[in-house]
Length: 572
Image 1: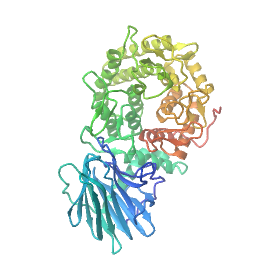
Image 2 (image 1 turned 30 degrees about the vertical axis):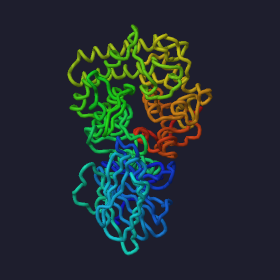
Image 3 (image 1 turned 90 degrees about the horizontal axis):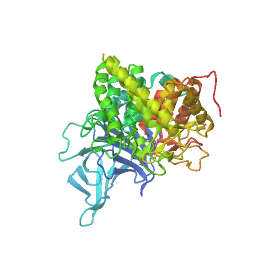
Image 4 (image 1 turned 135 degrees about the horizontal axis):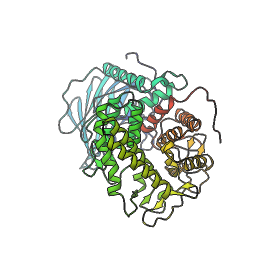
């Protein structure tokens, strides 16, 4: 094995081993009927993702060591190296003892068949794919049980007692890949070098900070390894939210991933267009997309203009990308007013909590549709982004119009949703104020200094005094709320997107010290608990999917602002 960098500080049970360009992932599954290390597929149409369980010496308790280019599994004197190549190839090398491939034949029409002395095929109907396994060297034993319709059990044991054994596992549709198998070590070196370049670019100066180096490498790995190639419904290289369970590109998550890639404008633009590629004829963006399909039942909040402005501030988009985004962003903005306004007040609504991105926030606890102040805030920022883009494109009259619309939208926000010294949400049909203390009601702070001073100051005070700020950041429901749940999704836990939106708004509103303080808290939480989907607001423990790209992206975006000392702190 060739020399490579030190192992990544990851737990295979939370952060899968994968690589840029692959639809395979290797995970330690503890929530299966049979625990162990599994080769999995993250294809969008897979009904069952676990393909093979890897049993070293017949057992499920192998230790693991993750490098970007290679995974090492060990048990006693047996070592299995796993290297991924292309969208659907895994190469394994077994030394020492034995490896058993336990085929996950769990669907009605699954079948495992032997095609020759050294090759087997797995008709994996649950994964919606087929797999071919070739073995070079060693001794094999194939045991399978046929129940008259399907294989209810199948295992292939490979012995490396007499020397190393190589296996090649190929995913295919109707034709087995015929391309040559590359050297395993060389394939691992190429992957490692690609990751090292990615980490050096997107980790920024923080990658050289001893205090944060391990966390930066983890965040860089989570983002790099989640990338899949163009193909199917994905028209360009795209970063999935995760290669655990959240195996889609959602239509606000991708904005945060794009923002973290500002040092590579082409890559940043690709992540934005991954969703804009699927804008419909009315201007609506989908809820999510993957290689197999597009979901349009829901939408996500219009934070796209905010993210484009963020990238433009950092020269993170090319002139061509700005020009190409202008018309789609205009159509997305207008869609809300043309298709989501249900009365004569010209105020758009969310049809469901999913539309807001805050799926189960307490603002949606009594029903839908809902008019929420965050939506008008995002749309005002989007209008300001369009004005800026219009100026950039030499369209001054359009810029004036967009700025006028933004000002009127902010006026509507403050006149309609500011009640008794706080922002509120309303029932769309009755206009009644919804009883909620969700953090979503403080999101007008994303407007920064565009939010009038009375509302700005009072909302900052509410953030500080309303039970939101914990040691780890802003809870999405006050910790003293009767609706607070430690693992309540958007009813308590701390999330990366809400953190970044508020930190950015606070900084632009003149509250830099508070923004820095919350940044410190959130970055420290990620460094301690990993790049989890969300975090327990009180303990800081990582919750749900434990390897999420938008968390890693927000961490990479915020970590460089963490200084060794601060001149002042906000402690509550």
